[in-house]
Amino acid sequence: EPEVTQTPSHQVTQMGQEVILRCVPISNHLYFYWYRQILGQKVEFLVSFYNNEISEKSEIFDDQFSVERPDGSNFTLKIRSTKLEDSAMYFCASNNRDSNSPLHFGNGTRLTVT
Amino acid sequence: AQKVTQAQTEISVVEKEDVTLDCVYETRDTTYYLFWYKQPPSGELVFLIRRNSFDEQNEISGRYSWNFQKSTSSFNFTITASQVVDSAVYFCALSEAANQAGTALIFGKGTTLSVSS
Image (tube, rainbow over all chains, first blue to last red; front, side, top):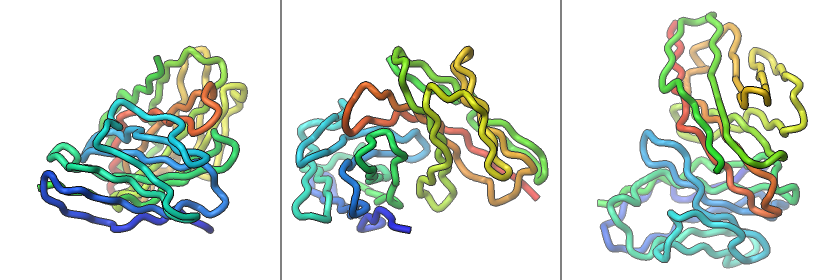
């Protein structure tokens, strides 16, 4: 069964550094998402992306964050200048044209900012 | 405003017991979707079920069953004859259909289920 793939599984970075989290959504999906889960807390929506532009974003997704689909398969989340509070698990997800079809989540990237 | 409440933070049961995880939601939309996801200790999010607001039929899938009641804005999840492998965090989530694309899922805080042998 096709799946969403995220790399790396764990990334450690120093405060103030830029980090790029990578995702390969399921190939025939058109909607892409990033969610965040701070350790022990709920999963929070960051941003959705469709047709090469952001379709919705939360208040968490400030100017420090950006998303990009640099080619036909990858979907990236960039954090420009990481802060300690950015430490979390970041999940990428995708779904197809029925925008309320189930989200297929990747296994997540655990970001640790030191 | 949309909101999902999972009042049970942690539940501990012994194998073979039945357990019900509660979920109460708030939304102003008449069309919406409800979901349950499982997050095992390995951390991934596993889709379990989606239910739309017009379908109040209860659903059963093996040992899992879901009870959707619009009158009480609840979408409860029952595991029958629980097993150790059911130990995980379970999230209830809501999606409003107002957005045409990229609809955000709003998650509850999750219920940690521990099943001991």
